Structures are given as C-alpha cells and as structure tokens.
Length: 464
Image (cartoon, rainbow, N blue to C red):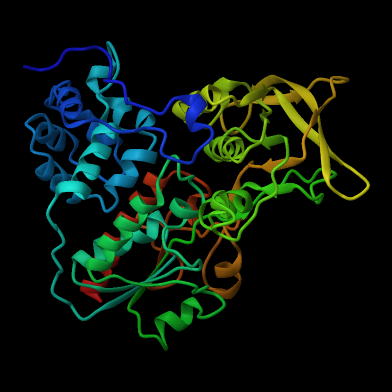
C-alpha cells in the first residue's frame, strides 16, 4: 500500500545551537525504516515526470521502488547506472527545483524526498554494500580531463566505463573541485567526496594533482606531444568577482573563494592541527545571497564569530540560495540584512576593516535575470561593524585556459563557448562543460554537462 502522507518524512538534524559550533554534518540521514516509509509515498506514476528534472537521468521511480522493498543495494546499483556521484548529489543537489519540482505528489502536498532517499541509498552502500566496480576492457584510446570537479569527474567516470584510458589533471592537491574547496564539511563531508573519487580510481581513472593546465602543459600539448585523442575541460568558475568599492583591499576582506578554500580544503577549522589559520573577528559581514554566501556565513559562525550578517541587495524572495540553506542559516543565528547594498568598507589606521557602510534598496522593474532590479534609496546610508568581510557575489572562469589556447572560442565573460549541448568547442578534439561554460551554476548541472560530453567524445572517437 502506498503511503499517502502529504508531507515528507522529516530528516533528523543536529540542534541548531549545537551544530553552529561544530563542522559535523547538519543532516543526520534516514534510518532504514524511515527510508522505506518515505519511499512508499512514491506512486510510480505512468509518465514519471520526475525524470525530466534530473540532468544525469537517474532512474528515479525504479530506485525508489527498490528502496520501498528494502532492496537498498539494488537501489544503489540502479542509481549508479547513470550517476557517478550519488552520495554527493543526495546532499547538495537542488532537488526542489529539479526532480522534486515535477513530482506528482507535490501537487496536493510535498513531493517525495528524492534527494534524501538518494543520500540514504549511497550511504547505505558505503557501509554495507559490496564492491560494484567493474573495469571495462581497454579500447586503446586516451582522453584527458582538465579539472577534477563535478563535471570532470562525471565525464571521466563515464568514459572509463566505456574502456577509455582517462587521466584527470587537477590544479589543487586534492581532486573534487568545488566539492572539496567550496562546500563546507557540515554540508558535504570530505570523506564522502574521497570515497566517490576512490571509486573512479578503481575504474581505472588516473588522477594527477598539482597539475595546472596552461602552465605545466597546454591543451595543445595534451593533444599532440602527450598523445591524448580528446580533451574535456571542466575547470569551473574559480575567479572571484568583487564589488569594486572603496576598502575592498583592506585586511580582513576576503573573497568567498579564498575564505572557503582555507576552511575546507586547507582545513583552517582544525587549526592548529592543520597550519592554515584564518582571521576571524567578532563581527562578520557576508555580501551576497547565494549558496556560497550561506556557506561562508555559517562557516564564520562555527569559527567563533559572535555576530554574522548576510547583506543582500534584494529581498528574500529573490535570493538564489536554496530554501533549505536559508532556513538553516536563520536557525543558526545568522542575521539577514535584506534590501541593503555595501557602498564602502571602512578601516582603521593599520589597514584592517572595521565597518561596512551600506545603503538601503527598494525593488524596481525586473532586469535581464527576471528579478526586480534593486534601486538605492537616497539618504538611507548606515554602517555595520565588521572586522571580517566576505564578498560572495559570484565567480567567473580563470582566464589561464583561454589565454593559452588561442583557437578556443570564449565569450565576453571568459566562458568557453560550446557549440551545442554536447559541449563540443571551436577546437577540434576539445569539449568543455560545467561552470567554465555556463558561469557559476550547480553541481548537478555540471555533472549533466560532463555526462553529455562523455557521450559525444565516445561517438567522435568511435568514428574518428
């Protein structure tokens, strides 16, 4: 019998006043009994609209039916048919705007908790499952993947399953891209990412770290002297944007990229065990309204800041962050200063930030993004105390690949231009996908781009 409850089974979580002082995972996951109960809410409807919302084509009703029957390992294998990173997707994908958005149960209540069930299945497999890695026979062709983030890892995994010799070249000392340097431990534990990367290694994927393509080797050299038959570029959007206001060069002002990289990849939150300190004042201001801003603010709180404020120039309705992340931030004591925009960062005689001067905003007509344009309210300036200011207003691709590959077409934002949804570029034998093409977006969209590119590379090399 289906479970006709109109609401999702709640996910157990740490208490907000406990978790805002540690970096342990906020959500604790379903038990086996809870997973079965929630899975039974799925109607396994004929047209399966949820499938249309998944960029990596997970067979959602099929894996949920297996969960409902208690066949957790089979459910994992079903997900793994199309997704290389199920434990990651179950934690950080915005399911509410993708698969769950189209769930029939959402018409008269809440949709089935697809993301929570995917997470449960992946975690269950890590604890109890058998090895599910089957190496394909080599087909004699080599593919280089530039960038070890979600797009690159997905592309690499799909190609390895088809028998290609795949090498991933990662600029940092650890593979994972934004999964390790951007998303905090309390949302995505790094041992989860490592386990997913290790599965790719077991498939035969070679991962080379500290390899800055464009410096150590060029794209052209990968295709010629290094003998690769094709290259996929998934280097993300790691170049931070700034507001270009007075005071951004003061001590205590960080880009969100540096702030989160120090905390996550370089483990500043475990100082002095890891020798990467990060300056943390009593008052912290984070500028921005996306998931990165939420991550930075919640991390600052955990590092001991007493007063953490998010300053965002629009209202909460226009915030691009996930509703869940906004909710968690509020629970943890983050102060939201909405319809405000910084105009200047003030500092002391020693060059350290002391205050952020803001102006109040009101919403006017919609802009190109479809959101109402914020307009300054004359004479409404005010100041917020801030020894630390984190700028989290977006990122663009690093220009290194563009500058060292002259026949690779890019646009005005520095993004590589893809000719179609396969990720094929203007340079023969080179594909690109993820944030380096779209600008900063989501993990699952990057994975979808990596999957599309892998299929296109396979078709190209079979016919070459």
